[in-house]
Image 1 (tube, rainbow over the protein chains, first blue to last red):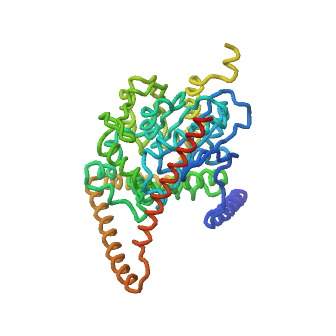
Image 2: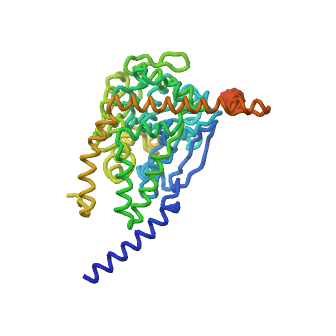
Image 3: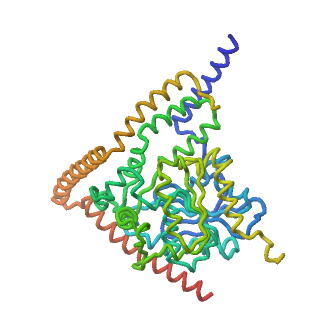
Length: 358
Length: 98
């Protein structure tokens, strides 16, 4: 019994110490644990290269990016929970495209800026840096939606294959707050702030509506695992990432609201980019559509119609037992989801030396 | 099977399931969305009223208001975008030449 008491006292001491450290802002999970360097930047956007410390097995590097609302460091959360390191382990060179954090200077930044200026330039920079002729793209969440908007309009881009992870295209299946924009109860222009952008705080509240008790559960989890430093590392990295949304450039937001949300442009085939129609059926790349069966943020129904919209592409549909975050981060990602995604990419990428053998 | 955790955690999970489910039903309703939008609009209106008052006072003593600074910021932003697009075009032309 005394041993039990002593163990409990030690545990409580560790919890008190960790709790005090956490409350005073101690860094359990420094941002960007994997060495990287910026190889291209334009405006607020930048492309980070994460050189593979081991020999790469495939000649085609991977360029990953998220949406305009999230932080790109979701791809490199902690040393033990890093999507980038898993890309390395699968034998690829890795790049992460960060769209940047818009401020008043960027209120006029539109989808054309992101998709016709930044994306092609970042792909060219990735090719230049890695010496490759083509790249594989991974678009996570709204990043996948952006890729699906931008790629069919620019068939000349050197892209070998596209992985679209939890990318919404049917916006009628998201949540009630998105519905307010969709049916015109909320004017998209009325939510722009003084800087002319869609404020990050508003986006966070949009997401909180889906699971209102998530914040409390999160802190109860923290309390329960306060004695476990490894848990704290993961907790800090993830909660920082999900609470740290970025504003959306005003012009891009208005286009997203008009085309994606109100106009159902993906489903109706009315997408536009730079005043030209975008035809999804003209996309001829291999495309992997990944959905999480437990994804509450982007439900499967919002992504599923994509397969029928890409008749020209070699589409594979991958339904994984995962939530939105666990498609790319955490234990499920490490064991199940990421190996399957990277395995598919490996099938569509030539191994280094393949030309020499041919 | 996953470890159910200590007793207090099991109690919390039970309450959360019960209470959270109901709350999700509420926040997932059209009515909630309308109330949230109403609150948002009211907040915006109050802020604008305050800014109008502040602007009148600041202009009376020949000082710029937040709206003036905002307008200047937008003009600078337009110029920055133009310069950015010019340099992108230049870079592209250089690459094409190379």
